[in-house]
Length: 405
Image (tube, rainbow, N blue to C red; front, side, top):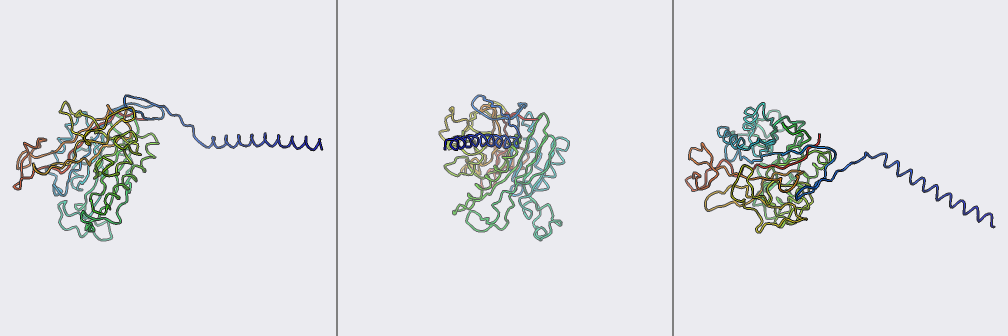
């Protein structure tokens, strides 16, 4: 009995040793299948971001503009030199230009005008849009896209000061049941794709991706539009996670058709970071216009921000879900005080390195030949409405980022 007891104890002990060895070997095998990860934590004034490996810090500059190329301008190109002048005022020049509601003829104008400086790309939101200069778009409504008349196309444009890489059209969904503000089905349903490219930018020695987007526009009583926008923003943010984890700085500009405050709509929760107030978010992006009271082009009066009172920056709060209105007022009696256009950067060296401002482009003469930002100087239509180039502001800003080679 004593010998069997000793043998049994020996077997148990040997089993423990062997199992421990096998567990250790299994763990080593699992580790061997995974690449080594080296993370460097960088802490800067007011912000905390994570980057991998070496990099170069640069100020990344961008413009986004819903230019209302069809509804407001009928697809015409004779006023685009005014947009060109506004882009030129942003100095040093913008690395990225994101445009929305651009007719195909206008896209071709940008391609030609900026050839050798910027490369431009286009994706259609509508291929049968009669407000771009051709009233009959029936030829585009058959099943053969090869015979399309592109004068009926309107959509998003992305421009890069440098070179565009491979084109990526990220499907955002929200297309199955499209209704207007009254809940009636849209006669011209949209195709929702974010237009994205990896880009090689002049003066930026690292990996950057740019995206131009336009989300669902309408606000019906059943909340169909809100749900669609919320899902579209979440889809876009999720699709870009892989790029961010690959070390790219991602910049998204566009018309999100939603205000920033989470107590009104949750659309932008997928973009704002947890350290943005009020409400935080689950995203990985900084928005360029937060509590900043600086105009990116020089000394100006402090910018009005939403909400009022603004959030208070602290150790937990880096930036605010706020910003100056990006929708142009209709008339002296009809203000459109709402921020729905955004410039999101996946990285910022700190809240103090973010800056942005929108510019309302009113015509100062009835012939619509020159631009003013001053409502008091704006020309008026016969009904008293302001004459304007677009119902959205041209929005330009920047973020200081670290790009990886």
